[in-house]
Length: 351
Image (cartoon, rainbow, N blue to C red):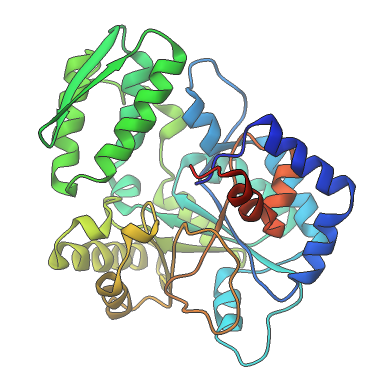
């Protein structure tokens, strides 16, 4: 995702909002469909959580304000309705938007669901089925918690033959290490990630980093069943193990897609129509994975590539706008209206 937290970018957004440019863009893009991507929510800014956690998880009160704004300015539809509309003929409803969450965090049920239920806002929750079924903490969270809780002043670790040295004396050091190591592990073969992660935890002296990870826990099947029993929530697949499909063999990818879909349908008694790619950048999907997603019986696949969706776009490479946890209201408005991508390119702010 592009980083948007600097004061320069924020001032741009606030100036555009004040000048009504964002309203004009909303009108110009009225037949383009933004799909928003969230992960989790948080109820406060805990000093125990690193910057990357706060960047990914939106404060509850801010999420409520965002939803109220969306209801006022857009027509919020379920993902199935949006996908069907994008297949044509014709055009989608003017100023239509869809809401999605990735992973299946407990906060989707405890905080996002009551807000969306009260406001009658539909959303799709893409779940990692191993996360739901076994309560296994996702590996990026394990990495972040290990680097947060260690008392070691530095980390020296080899990944695929390259030795990395990370100072860990300050909060900034640990944030840098978290982002750099996460990016490196994502680029590694999926079968090796757990091995490298166990080595990192051992070197840092925090092999039990996941024990008290209340903020990183998953929904239960009962919670998903409750949400899915309403007319507001669809449950989609985010693979079985949160592995990046292009890092797997064709057979492994097929199992990730079919096993997660089958388990969701068995546990909930409802069809699982939609899939979202873990990580979701252009390097994380391909014509081969596209073929496997279709063969598994999904109706759409969502990426994290930023942009609008239009009638006639491939429903298996849908784009999304990611919503971060550090946005002021004007930044959220800029995200939904698509101005963020333009400003990020002009400012050279690729993240």
